[in-house]
Image 1 (cartoon, one colour):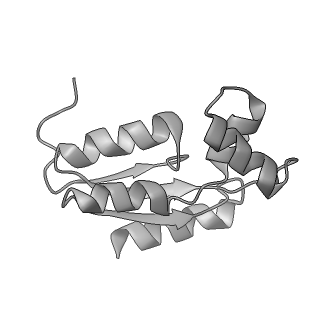
Image 2 (image 1 turned 180 degrees about the vertical axis):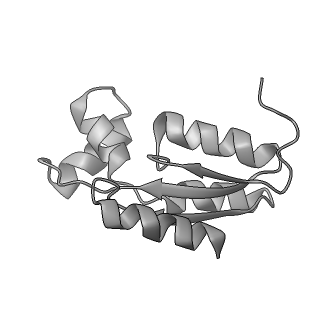
Length: 109
C-alpha cells in the first residue's frame, strides 16, 4: 500500500514515460504527491513508421516496447494534469553524472 501521507511531498520517478514508471507516477500523484517525471529517449533501431505500426497493432514484442520507450514524458504528464494533479517532466540521461545534480536542482526549484 502507498503511504497516504504523500500530500505535498515531491517524488522523483525515473523511466516514467511508459510502463511501470508511468503506473508508479500515476499512483503517487493520485495520493497527492507532486511528481517529477524523468525519462531518457535512446536511439532506436526501428523507423518511425515501424514504431507507429507497432502501437496501432498493440501487439507485444520488441518493436512495441521500443515504441513506448520513444514517447515523451509529456504523454504521462498530460494525463496527470487532466486529473488536476501536479507533475513536471524532463528528459535526462542519468548515465551522465552531471545530470543528477541538474535533476535535483530542478526538483528543488
